[in-house]
Image: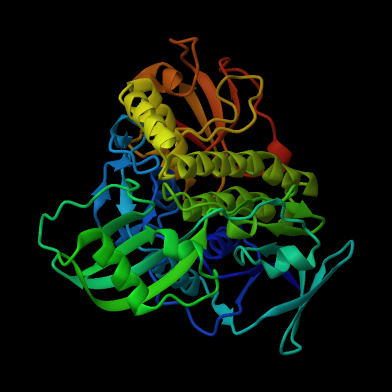
Length: 472
């Protein structure tokens, strides 16, 4: 029997498997596809996701020759979200296709002796007090202590576990496509997502002369979601927006999506969990979907690993739902709001103008930047103002950074902290200021699990989980 069966080898499943292997768990990672998709899919890593990969030493070649975008957007409004004001070493998005992230994570896992078992379609789940029996279409069976569904919006794990997926259906349909076009010159100014005559279009450069086109219009609303996107449909959309300026030469990939918004009431049922798109679907506006899934995996991985090692009780696993469900709900909320702002309607145009003014206010801009980037995520507070908050990647007294100490995936105890140094207290909502000698216990995922201003305070055992000590 394996410790954990991870179903779905997209970014969420790959990162979760990596975290579990780091924690010493036996992992089987399966995917129903016979080979990895060559589609680019998601296009960027938000700042918090960059931090996550950095703290495990997983960035590597992902930093090479990719654009660093110093701003995000909210509903394509012309005032960008300024990431430069965020308290992070990575105040930018990495413009990198999902495909490259999957390749990097899969290579890392292979180096740890874990491969993806492909061509296995899950058909059954049966769980009892000691584990879960998973069956597959080829009659194969896997017995695991725990199962995590990272298998997308149509998750077989979610369905077989009886986890409902309430929400609302999409109200509009749109197309995303990777294209090769003629007529795009260097320095060509890309339009923002401004509705016009019932349509929306944007083009983003990728690699090797390929562009990502995203568009919707009246025609797309009358077509079935499962209908393949034809070359002429994309060519017609480009002509309708750009005239003869841009000409479609090649259609590499295309699919339809909607603004459906769904989320289960629970992320855990017994020994079965859901994460990533299996736990939440929403409009891709703002580029948050893949990043939300990576952060699900980062939250669940260390907890499940601790339980597998016998260093924590299974009750710790309830905190995965308690912490990540509100974050998913918030992303569903802001993407729905962005969808409203993109409706081609005169009244909505007035609302967009109001939002443009608000985004010019630094405090409002920063609030939305923190939401979209993931930097602003905080979990339930505790007895100290730092508890539940993300700990910035501070430089320690020995020249190492906090991220360096988190590489092992263990708790890190910071002692002799000056909570006012470098704006640390203010950045984390701590108003005391000037407190020296504080003790801060940072969880493996970079959030504060315990803190005290008293240098003599007894540090909790946190369920017997191992930790390393790093003076600040």
